Length: 364
Image (cartoon, rainbow, N blue to C red; front, side):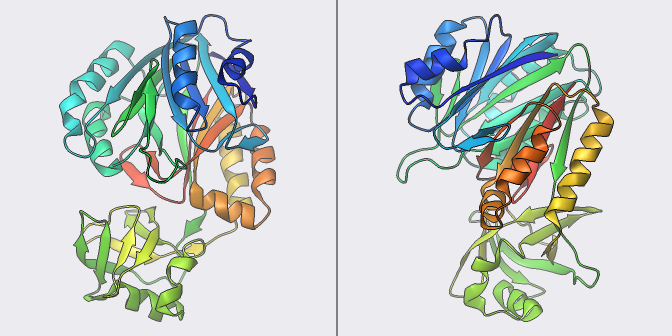
């Protein structure tokens, strides 16, 4: 697969689009990352310039190789030796299954083979409903999925995504990319895990609507967390960068970030926890060594990676900046090949919504 990536820091949207697309000729599909204010105009201009391409867009802090900014326009074009299908799933807060036929048609039209097709999606809200819906169409197809939740838009404004120049709220836009001349795979990097002496807990009372963990082992969730780590209850939320919660599914851990302590001792989270889930209080591991392992795995699978597209959680971004590691992280990732991505408020990986994680797709 051949791809072209262009970028611009120009604050004039028309000039930025001209600069970022100067090397793009005849794309089959385009992925736009920009700041929130510029996204509608940039999407319209790019769709008008390439009317035959399928174009999706998202906003927030974005990066290309070693450059990262909340005011950069990044345009990634899927040009040759590939096939793309893009679409939208709406009504995320109520009934996303209503649009399942749109995704099913895209899946049928792309004719995915094993290890050659990836679905990349960006959504505004209700990730669990979305992933449950998309799994219906993607399961048993050989199509893997990564995605990110829009993050960083102004308070009081709605999250937005774009498809072919049109702006949508309460929606998910997706693009299926089939590599006609090589592989395409997805990866997940988790820098948290269970210590050797970690205690399993059972979620015995939850409020799914508010993503509220009320009780662990029939005790207030905050009480269990506080006693296990020996920290005051009012410091639990501040401790999320070091010890988030993790849902265990067989040998996998899917992170759930707590963001609010309620008066009764329950914890509000960004990922839903179900009743009877096995929950661990996780430890932060050696993130530099873990990223090295990730890079080694990618290098082994893709000696000649053409393009890497990732989404990093905002909490990873905050942690890496706090540890003065973000620049090192981006520099290391850029050694694999062209690396673009964004900072999300949540991440999707195959059939799971997760927090505090990096998800990425790699194309040969």
